[in-house]
Image 1 (spheres, one colour):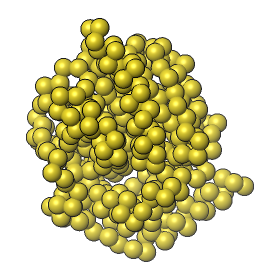
Image 2 (cartoon, one colour):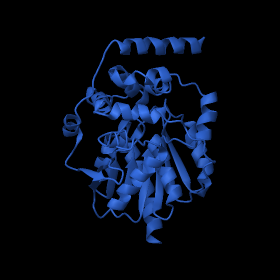
Image 3 (cartoon, one colour):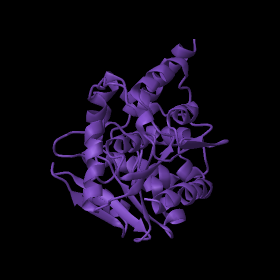
Image 4 (cartoon, helix red, strand yellow):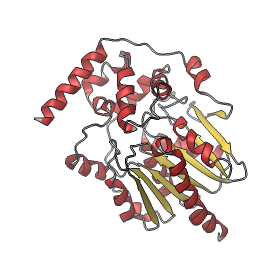
Length: 327
């Protein structure tokens, strides 16, 4: 019965969305609104223009932060404010996201995400750093650490995606009631066929309220950030291309090879990736600790920026700075 109700709800919401048409917004208009004095743009070998920010203490320990699916580097702004006095905080927009948006080769794969991070690291000539990520960006972070263990001093995983086999087993046993509707719809062929021309505003509202567990930080400005960045010229097509790409079945990813200190942060009320993932990560990562925040959703760095940044600061000062001094 609940499955039937869920299907009817999807069809109802989709019908309402279809009633409104919304074209793209000019890229220069969106860029003017969402750049900051810290914004920089890097031209990569495939012709992409990658938006990144290099903020905080220029001589501090570098921390690279990678956003999640449908998000942008703006999600890290609260942590920049909390940590920037002592740490160098670098954030970036992945392809199909933020002000990076569509890329010329139409490659939005996991491999392309890795190349994007590598390009920023090379451009900034970073030798050692901490890397962190939220949701999909957490998966980007730990995969980067697997490829470059010699440069990664530590990991920060915020509501992070795990290996594909975790997702498969979790999705069979965990209901997704209350989850952002956009992810379920983008998994449907019929929706992707028309999604490039419909107004995503209602999805932005529902998705933000769900992901942030109805936090008071979900303001009109926050909703408009997701909405307008999604409407940036070329981005909707890039998003659809990303979800159209078949998921590659790869060999099991050896998380046990990750030996660097790892901080795992999760919201107890996460509707996107269940908080049970925190325990799964601690089971396979030898030098790890987890903090689960009661009543918090999928985005702790925005929902509770002071508390989550305080935990990051404690982790960095006790684990990373000490480890770096012995290298």
